[in-house]
Length: 211
Image 1 (cartoon, rainbow, N blue to C red):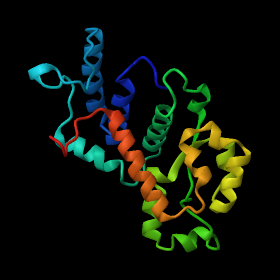
Image 2: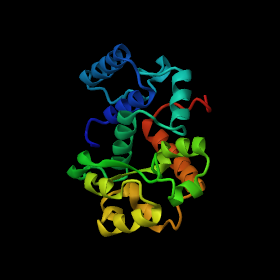
Image 3: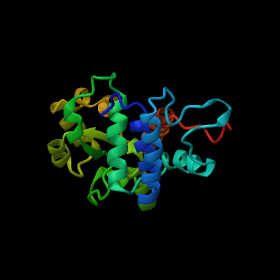
Image 4: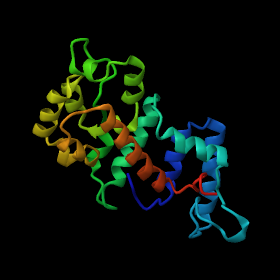
């Protein structure tokens, strides 16, 4: 996942989050490729003296990307790519396990919990539940069979399964879930804010709020 390509993963993740069209994707990657062929130490997001940034995104795009990290992510491919990249960031360089590529994205708060579930009591507002369900703070990487086994179960059921199957040690995005006593809106919001800050830092984009 995370390798010697340097800025390739932040670049790909930036484009994925913003959901660029095919033409814009091609143009952006072409610029990055030209930089790589120059064998320049300058990465796509590095300042290049007074001439500006060699591969930049407008302030509007950067602001939209930053905001998107705290909003519900509805597109399956976007959230999968983003979460797998984020998981890889939590491992030391060159130590990212190969099994990560087959990881499945678990939504701890399910999208369609049973009417009799604890989820319906703890997240009684349908609109709020939808927003929180698709927030990155509600997500983590797990084995696909484990994801299937947990289904839409309550947190009190999911947590022991995650423990039994060794998911807290196998995936770093799930490590903190081991010690959480109750999965609440506050927990999801706090995780979303923390993860968004960490992902934004790794993207290497100029902060639109500081320029």
